[in-house]
Length: 166
Image 1 (cartoon, rainbow, N blue to C red):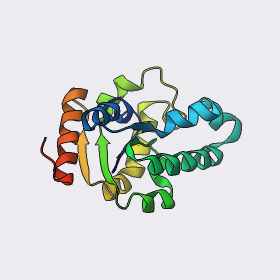
Image 2 (cartoon, helix red, strand yellow):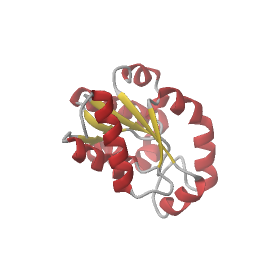
Image 3 (spheres, helix red, strand yellow):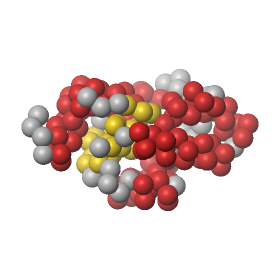
């Protein structure tokens, strides 16, 4: 079984995804963390090699993560790849959303190449919203709830999809 968490930057995909995996007794993979472990900081990749090269690296990590199964957190733009979109067939896809106000506090000093500020974040979200929604089987707003509560909700939804009791 593979549960894939998608959504915009700073929606809580990694933080909450880890908790979901633990609740379900599944391994957790964050494709952005894998890219960083193998190739260095994402902002440096963008700066030295450009976004197209980053997207190639991202696609390779998506393929590897999906092969491994469990709970997989994608970087915000991973779903832009049409092959990745097709790969989501058969996966349980959870979309994390968040308001601009909630994300503004989360962006802080994080170095995110495509979203250096909340205005850029909003443009990215607006451009991807329809795609995210089309791919999602389940949507959770992470703006104002505790990470543990969101993880409990997602894990319960996954269990119902699999026909297992909470």
